[in-house]
Image 1 (cartoon, rainbow, N blue to C red):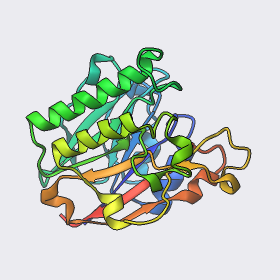
Image 2 (spheres, one colour; image 1 turned 60 degrees about the vertical axis):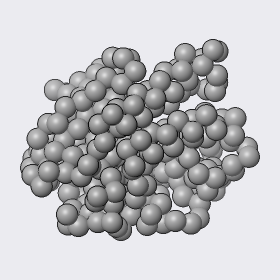
Image 3 (spheres, helix red, strand yellow; image 1 turned 30 degrees about the vertical axis):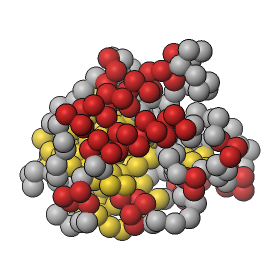
Length: 261
């Protein structure tokens, strides 16, 4: 069995101590980070290695985006893809010794206006998802786990108020349709919702809220999916809400699941 966690850390260098605390307290076997905001060579690995995370693959760029996979288990670099031709560090893959491939994604947020004619970032988000769909359709993934900040809360109970957010980027019908098409193309199973099928569930709370906990206007933007051939091995999903209350936190919290493989 191994446990995998995904966390948009919003700068791994700024929040190195938070990552170390999380690794110490929760000790997942694999941690996938998004929005590391650092060139790969500047990611602070020494402390993570001291905690047992000696294996590492990443893609990075200065100040923006960035994805990394830290692992106690041996992994090999399984490549990346420049989705939508943006030139961004938004995808990296790693392969475990048992042949399971882990894809770590950071889907573009999409800006504030849900209209590609008025907002180029929204168009880029839709194009990114379309290419993900096409890749999974052309080359059906097997023995694979996909995690990351997908920047979409697909279900009505993945947001604090479905009707209020229908015109807000991350929950608009067109984004949900694109994410659903991506999921269907790879026959991905949403492990979090397989384990926790009912009820409000969030992994992100805005920095803009004066009291995020009391307001509780959250969204489930962070996901763990698996291909059907290993989905039944997934269990024990958790979202660590308390970490949003740590000092100088990310606006996202870790999502975890375990796999018996």
